[in-house]
Length: 98
Image (tube, rainbow, N blue to C red):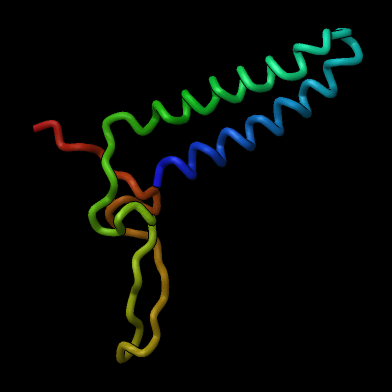
């Protein structure tokens, strides 16, 4: 479940850094190789820093990492998805260090 999040974060960072390069390329007169190297490097660093925030966590056992649980309303006929109470919808909980 973590890999799709990381890939999504990398893609978003890549698009933002290419847009940033578009605005900076005119005034700074950047060489052509920087259009490939700088956005990839910046996206990699941002994704790595995002991945590091998951250090010391494990997949939530209540929702199995989805961040959502099914709640039965009324007599059991209506089923709603709600945020997991164990992980607050994040899909990961801190590990026990004891």
